[in-house]
Length: 243
Length: 267
Image (cartoon, rainbow over all chains, first blue to last red):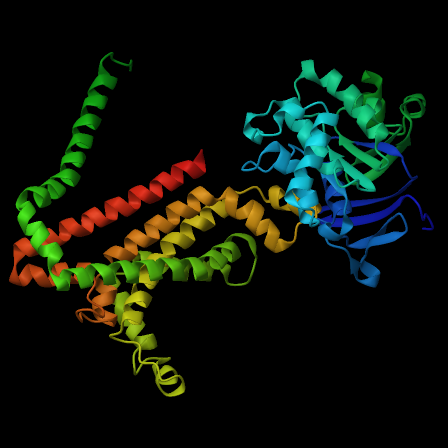
């Protein structure tokens, strides 16, 4: 692995009888979607990159910095990695206002409360939800909560953004617009974006390239057109045939 | 077989009668306390120095026990809920034991551990010059022994119900372990924490068996309100009723204050 600027990931994770083993590199600024059926290992991939589950073998290097390499006993904590993670279901802190949720990463880095809140409010406004700053997560609509979670993940300007099912919690009517807006915000971010989705329409709309995971292995990689023209597995043929 | 109309009505009637009987069963003794004592007697008892000493001591001992339970019980509840360590099931069983143990057995066990001839008694006496039994400190330990499990169990339950992804989210945002506990875990379980603390404190306030066994019944040092009630029952039953009423009032006032806090936390 010689990639110095982007992300290079050689990942082997063992969870009980399930194993995830895959290897990929992403260029700086790339946006990819990780597509796969339920239980294929998509969320485990997010956890492994974020440092929430340990690698059994392999190596993760981001912008020249080794995040984890078991062979050399290197394993940065989630805190030290400084990634932006948008969790499935958002995982907003229920006892804090939306603004304090967004400000959390700055506060953890020692930014003073007033400055962190002002910056959080600016992010909420940038994502079109400036009016929800004082509300608790329970009072937010699905679309508002999604933007608060995105702002919380992006406010620290991470080099790598991991989004686990960013659109899954939205109902059909809100989804098309949310997809379009999200694609725009991600394009503006200077980060490498890895978007996990089980929905092929979301994956194709949000990402330049698709990585397909089935049963813990990378089974296909390419643009939607490439994979549609020559689908390497039945799953790929089936899901891209629908889109 | 077909359902006969009117049957649910009969069932509801039976439930209602039994529930009504339960309310009477719980309310009647309290009513008995209220009608047995004249207000003048209540004031006379309240003015007695021995009663004031017992009341002060009860508040002091029960609040110390609640504080000690918080100090030791919170880390314990966290470890039981979050850290997989060998013997965790055994540790949980041991911590819960005082809830079902007769308090007098607890007091005897405390003597066996911290008494002058107990497991640690020699070390405490000759090493540190501390003789625990029959001191206010012993009363605090006895109350903590029986009351802390209520806090630990309540908080552990709340921690188990808390989505671990919340803590993971905070970690990816750069928050240290300590910051996560302070800003995510404790605020999220605050209603349970307050409820557990109230239960723990109430149990400590009412503690009798372990206290009289391990700490004795010394006026001004270990004679808490329940012990004063017990002693008064022999000499002046009316005094015992008055003291009980005072204890009841203190419990109600402090619990009401805590419950106000509890509802604010939940809202």
